[in-house]
Amino acid sequence: MLLPHRLRLLRVFTDVSRLASLPTTELHADAGVLAAEAAPRLVATAFPQLESLTVWYAAGVDEALTAALQQLLGTGAGGEAQEALLPRLRYLSIHRLGTAVSDYAPLPPALAASLRGATQLRLLRLDFKLRRSTLAESLAPLVGLESLQLGKTSAPFLSTLLQPLTALTALRFSLPGVLRPDAGLSSLTRLAELTVAEATIDVSTLSRLGCLTKLECGALCAPGPAGAAGPGPIAAAARTWDLPPQLAEVKLTSQPPEALPALRAPKALARWDVFLALKEGTHYGEDGALLPEAEAALCRAAGMLGSADPDMVVTVEGRRLLPVGGRAEVGPGRRNHTPWLEAVRQAGVASLELNGIALSHQDMETLSRCTALKALGLGRTSYPPSALPKLGRLPALECLGLDCGSWVAEAAGAGPVLEPPPRITGALLALCADDRWAGRKVEVRLYHDPALSNGVKAQLASVVTSLQEELRGLGVDGKRLRLEAYV
Image 1 (spheres, one colour):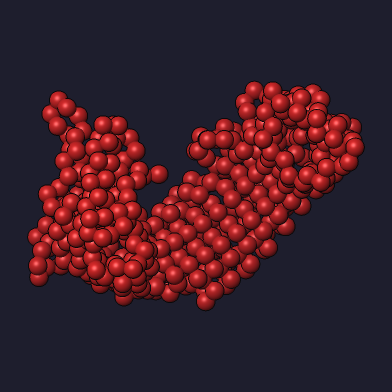
Image 2 (image 1 turned 60 degrees about the horizontal axis):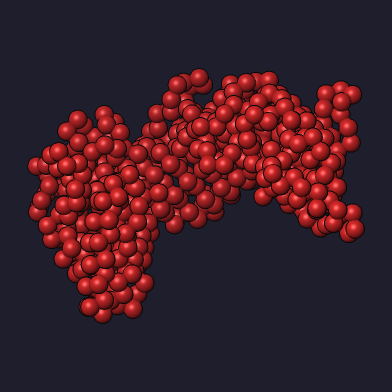
């Protein structure tokens, strides 16, 4: 990486390249370097074969960076356009280091204008929000683009941006709300990879994307009235919608379970990665009990996911989900969460993560019969510690993740203190030392909140170290049990 105070180093490369042209095709540079008046010609002289340029963006240099890009790309308004200093440049990325997509700043108009006319570009990544139609108009003429990545974008001018970019094979951006057919995607008939973070995509939007092989978004919904504020209603059985015929991978990060059965997956679909989000009022009541229709939707969703290699996450925010009927249906001979967990078992789900679920002994019994499970995560989920050893029955299990949140309690006047549940250490030892795991590489990971105080973290680490020592005394690799912070 080239830093501003390393401009002298760039001159060294320039001197070397005059003796023998450097074959370098890829360069990463700080925006402060390119903002220096001499930098564009130095870069072009030092690296004449350059095809890919990544710029680490820094605020306050927009005007100088704009001028530099215009020289490198040969762009500019009217008579200001010059011959490109880097005629081979095809890939341009402007990154914002350590910044979440939600915190991206709006794309500076001058920076957008510097790209107008750069039809030689094949890949463009801009870590900025796109909020104005005039900025979309600056990017729309880049008809040579095959890959485009942006930050948060507004729906009203998506069509202006996307309709001309018919060469795109990969597209990534963020969009709150619903992506409808009028967004301009129908012209992208070569598109193979589509990522629209946060968005719910109306499935009819995908109907023209016959080459699509990889899709990631918040959720999929049935076609609804154009201009509706949210997803259209999805009938459980009356109607289904085909997904693109070549679609091989799907990741949905906030999918209502009732929508999945209305989607018809193609034969090419090899992998589902689905986060099922349950919401109060729709899927469970004020008492935290799962509603019967939501239970049925979970069962149907699991059955649908079984058609591919599924990763399934079920998430409830802010509480522990009880089964249909509430606490009265927890225990031996009662409903528990058995119906939908049994559907997960029958679907052959290989990776399952449960967040915010209250599991009973009977639920743990059902989970222990999910023989296809390779990865199981119980994140912010309650479970009886004495039932943990049942999971030793899982014949394909490779990784078990357990939440340590219940190990930390609030002490009056003392803040958070470590109070592991009774019997948890014995249950963990019994599980990790299970003879059925002999000769297998199985990991048990204990996850904790990274915001815990250093004192509590140290106490947790001490408990895990003691358990590891006991496991070694039993002839088991102590590294089978690990402590990690949530990412």
